[in-house]
Image (cartoon, rainbow, N blue to C red):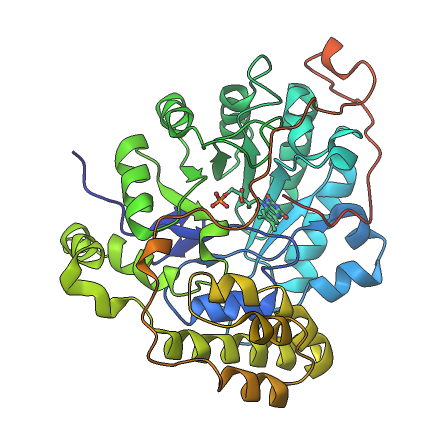
Amino acid sequence: MSALPTELVLGSVRVDTPVVLAPMAGITNAAYRRLCAEQGAGLYVCEMITSRGLVEGDETTKKMLVFDELESIRSVQLYGTDPVYVGKAVEILCGEYGVAHVDLNFGCPVPKVTRKGGGGALPWKRGLLAEILISAVAAASAYDVPVTMKTRKGLDDDHLTYLDAGRIAQETGTAAIALHGRTVEQAYSGQADWDAIGELVAAVDIPVLGNGDIWEASDAVRMVEQTGAAGVVVGRGCLGRPWLFRDLAAAFATPGGRSRLGSIQGAESRPVLPNLGEVRTMMRRHAELLSEHMGEERGCKEFRKHVTWYLKGFPAGGELRRALALVDSLATLDRLLDELDPEAPFPVGELGAPRGRQGSPRKRVVLPEGWLDDADGSGWHVQEDAHEVTGG
Ligand SMILES: Cc1cc2nc3c(=O)[nH]c(=O)nc-3n(C[C@H](O)[C@H](O)[C@H](O)COP(=O)(O)O)c2cc1C
């Protein structure tokens, strides 16, 4: 078995551990990225923004393009369907925002996105995919900024695109490809297919990042061992658990990685798991960072959605949970957090359990009329959407 990777190299960008925070709309803002980065090394990608929104100076888009002062690598995920807009947007990101890494979203399964041929629908049009990547890479290369792409296996099991996408990424100078081992049709249901990630690794020479169903650091190690991926992209597993990045960094810090990880899972290592007191501190820090970046009122409102994730499996009464989910100031948050028992141990039953979105497969993938008739689509005009924020 080959050694685990200890770093991730994407063109000019070097990351101290082969771990990427998955872009998640509404989650991976500057505050959350900072919170995760305080736990351990990794590449922390900004929420998705649209090419057209950026090019047209849309205010919402601009507000999302905020970076923490300590953010050493500015990494942004871009959505786009038109090579011209995407190229211009990459130019703005690199030239005006000092962005050091651009990821392109070709995996979003949301019907209102795929209906227009965007996100996960786009790789079906191989020629158009190539045009977009060529345009992005050309704009970014002037700044020595690597472009990566993130995609799914395909539209559904009868319309797989990931191997072609990998080939096209390689041919266009894309620095890496991240594969979420599900189809658009599956959305977040079922289990991610790690074999597909392994197949892609075998088919291309550029780094492949494996994505899907990493709930614990041990899953990340298993995925890399099983697939040969150059690194992992972690999404839902870190919801309410930013310390997962600490575990991930430790797991990939070889040569002790594997045994260290074994002990994280073992009885003697239980202290590594945070008790409710430590989780409480993490929650406070998260709300504080959100408040610093957005102002206290908005920051606390943003924090609300994270409460259930943080408290999953811990003892906390229904009334307290409800009050926390309505928090509107840091002072109220402090008062409520005080009611949580700091000694309560980590609920080990939650280890390895899925969290966040799951749901059921889509009945069908919504696509533009005639989309499947032609698998090339060079020069095809897919209308750019300025306000798409759903992302995943
Ligand atoms: C709330 C949420 C928002 C997401 N937003 C995006 C996004 O903007 N761009 C993207 O490429 N993927 C997005 N995703 C998908 C994740 O990046 C990731 O591919 C997916 O959750 C599978 O990885 P996981 O099993 O580690 O969660 C989102 C997922 C969730 C749960």
